[in-house]
Length: 426
Ligand code: SF4
Ligand code: SF4
Ligand code: SF4
Image 1: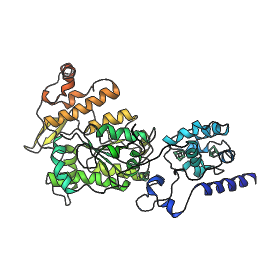
Image 2 (image 1 turned 60 degrees about the horizontal axis):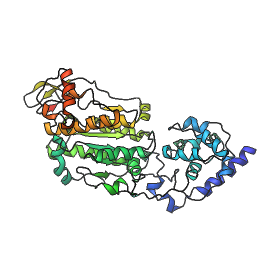
Image 3 (image 1 turned 90 degrees about the vertical axis):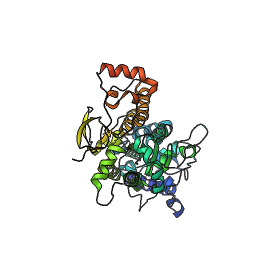
């Protein structure tokens, strides 16, 4: 009986605190529940903006410290311990959960007494200046844009296209995705974002209060940041690679998946990053990218999908379509699906995933400069596998030439010619 009264009281508090009026439910961008059917059946938010105040003391009092919320939390947050602290007046621990909480709502679904955990987390976070300036979801990359950048992408002058796919189960909160996007934007990569990743980029401001959408242009060109739209907009990232093959290289489109996927795999430096992937839709996006020859770097939680496509870090042999010969090549891209354990590993691996056998010597040097710089920045040393990717001395990044030459000497490296028309089709 006592439990039933508690549930009624808590549910009343929930109804008071979680607005369900049409105005609130229509505010898609701040109200995303990270649920999956965001394209057609968007549901109201479980991780809302501050709405009405809740009486923390009364709702915290109902928590029985059963630990069910901890058990189901996909981000493995110490919710019960934080609530226990909050019961004793310490709100800091529960307030800090906000950054890492994806708003999935599983904790509230299993709570036997209906504690409004998300509302408590949001309430405990306190007042923060919130201004989420986001570039509008724009849909597909246009043919005219592809004509402009097809050549620099295929030859490697633009070091790569990084596509940030949802969802939002980031290991260390929303700032992760902003760090990844900015690291590549300032290096001249084109960064595409869709779904929760596109929204979460807008949640972090620099010292001047600007988001990345205010700092980088929205063109499909060097250093551009594009919001492709909701998570189904990830198809436009794959579509841009297909269009490069078809419009720039004139690979026939109709009924020709194999040749287009082969062209993307060997010539277009594009990499999908699913840093917070958690939904089945995210898994479908990753699978779709793989089927079109696009390599993917996933976050650590994605190991739960139990499927990776890993390559060997050793030289490969590839077919040169120009004379139908088999020639030595590099492990590029090194993997098709890879789960990174840390943001450092994700950044370094994504830069390596953009290397392609088709790179011109100049393009390869640009890509290797980024790979080497990121390796030095995040691991503190030069990559040990650099000899696999340098085909001749012109491709060695100028800044670190002496050190890299030393590694090449030790590994008994021999120069070789780039493959003219790489393919894995026999
Ligand atoms: S990106 Fe993932 S979490 Fe976000 S709305 Fe889409 S499926 Fe849901
Ligand atoms: S809503 Fe947040 S705290 Fe609750 S289970 Fe999901 S990630 Fe964990
Ligand atoms: S599931 Fe509910 S009652 Fe159990 S520890 Fe979490 S908040 Fe408390």
